[in-house]
Length: 288
Image (tube, rainbow, N blue to C red):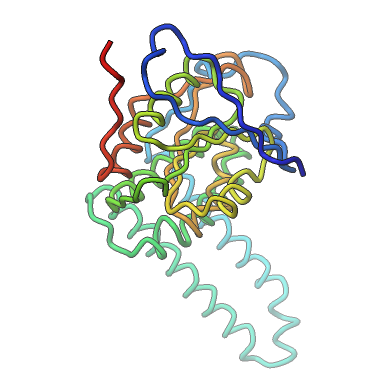
């Protein structure tokens, strides 16, 4: 595994006097962008913008719960008679357990929706966005793939996660926040990220391959992360990291296809960075 390398990109003329963040490249094992290996080279729908309302996630989440419950019910129906030869109570207990499991899943989805739309987190984060929700996101993504809606459903799921996570109002001290970005950002987006991170003295890490969060977090031990990735890589990153560490995930637009010249919402990124390091005032450029 290669050691981290530090590189400083050439500043653009418009931002030459602004403070800029340290940029660190990381080589690790799982290649970023591998989720797009099947891409045929054609233009992506909507110019690579997969924005979708949270309602799309909730519809597919409900479908996921119904599909899983139905699949387990079918299995019990098929093997029930054989299990009944062991004891007549076995099938009955399993049916009751399935009913309780389904009820808990539907109640959880209801509490999740109520938390989002009411503006109040009805459960602690370990039982909401940093708990079972991470698994629900991933199972819902699997169902969405079968309908050709993967990227839109994942985008909606990430937006739900971010809304719940941002609402916690978490703040960290100087040096306790990391910004993680992929190497496929456009020059304009990269310059914007570096300017924002520079103003708040936040280091920026560029990962050329996957598993970036695990290695960076192990070495830097941050208390919060702002990560940038496409919907597909973001889902993997949140599943791996968000349960252990608070993360806000900013998705990208892919006007030229995956893994090249991606753009991001820099206003949203600065809002998150500023909110997380609220106690740290941004550095001002020296007067000319």
